Image (cartoon, rainbow, N blue to C red; front, side, top):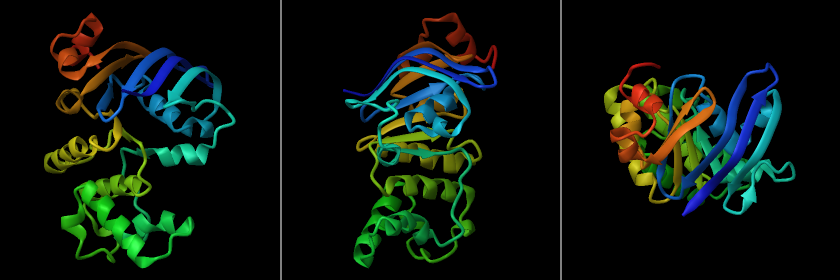
Length: 251
């Protein structure tokens, strides 16, 4: 089943740098789709399109369609706040709020009017368990979030994105600053999360892309060069440019 359908998407920033050119791509439900390629290829721009973060950038041109279920998210009339509840994003660098671990998770809910302590406690436990962090922090929820290690902070940010139970999770190099053990925990968590969520990941290495992908798409200088089932694409790429990048000949 297709969760997001991208059709003839073009994106150009006002500085003249064309970030995306005629992108046609399908994101499959309850799978991990990896968007990989050299820096500057448009991968992060595509993630930002998926939850309209490019609204905050200086965009000269955007055209095409991005259909989430049956809704074109590029339609200027859509409710962007509601969209971002359905499509959560986790960035490369974890940014925790200057408050407790628990408050990092409940802050947004309290702003929406959720006050009952039992409801908040249930959400905290559920989201931390989904992010594979509950066992490590359940006895210190009132401690400052900044006291957590880098890997724990990244999983806390993932848990925070899960609080509102989005349908799609976007991850932009979420393990780029983590040690191998923390990276392994995040990758294992993603394999469990895909049973409930659709995941789009920009990996920090080709090796990670090959390890976690159900589907993969190779981007180069704003173009989608090749896409396909992850294992097939990394073992037998059809395009020479894809093969050269996977083999480390450039990038």
